[in-house]
Image 1 (cartoon, rainbow, N blue to C red):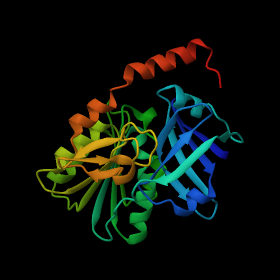
Image 2: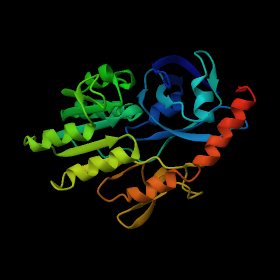
Image 3: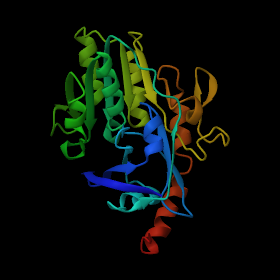
Length: 278
């Protein structure tokens, strides 16, 4: 059992949890993830580590409630516990030691940028963070990421916060203005990461994306999280989740991510019809 020490509401459907997990915190690195099970029996879901504190023995996760399991997790309160937390899993992000990096986060994908920004700043790398959401109410962790960045830029679809437009619009503005960018790291919806990769492709800027497809065991045994990278099959849980954005077959990844949409919706419907039991 993993006790929830702190819970914070980021948006109406997005929750932040600080969880007591000293063994996980001891080994966690930027870019890695956890697999969480709320209750028994229950689904195991992957969640990228949003932060960690080795001295306090805690890890931070951010959950967006989109289905039955994430809603069950989001309903937990401080003092309650998550049944299983397995990790850290996956390969740590290969972050540069010098230069200028642009971090691009969309929606709740902003959260996993926090440990990367911290590690980059500790190395003296110049960090520009570009974050976005549909509107101002859905922008998350701007202050926290801004504290770890040299510059913070915000975009919203409706213009209610920062620039009106997409994060890719901001990124293209930087590139068109002649901004020196050595590397881009993008985390968010698959379609957003694809757009970022296409924006940086003409200039040949190294672009890393965090691919989180359907997962089951998180150890490479089930093969559910396979993704095509550079024409070869890779497994996000053991080879990733960070990959070269210019080499990822996003069309396939998006298609596979939608494979069980009907089943997910049916599971949610049945659970709601039963009164959302915990």
